[in-house]
Length: 201
Image: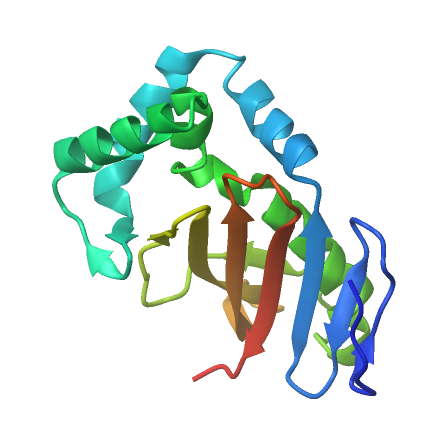
């Protein structure tokens, strides 16, 4: 990956941070196979567990197909089951990428960012820990499936907040973070995760 821009600090290896200083963005690339295998392990390699979790997650999140909201879980299942089988791929593998388990690795990387980078820039008083949680006004996780001729992109968006606990035990929001994950499902190329620091409104 080659970028020429003075606003970037770039290391061209997987699992390394690309920092866009100008826009308060951090980008990381993850190997598709490693990412997928870690999620699969969390389900103990069990397709029934994956399907059950998808059923639980569908009402909790928003699912779009080519930017159009799909609220009927059975239409969603039928559409993608047919599509995935056309490419002779594992439907369970696809379905597990439609669950909230996709946030495992991004959250792990985010903890590293806020503790190793952000913490040095912010005075939290006597606080010893920074925490990640849902925003005060909770927003649903968004899955947007972009279907193209030779590719299927799974674009995932989630907003979280970074906060600390003050001396009297009250949680204080420092800022929100917009997490965007792009998974090139058919090509299995590197997964792109972008963290954008938002102003605390």
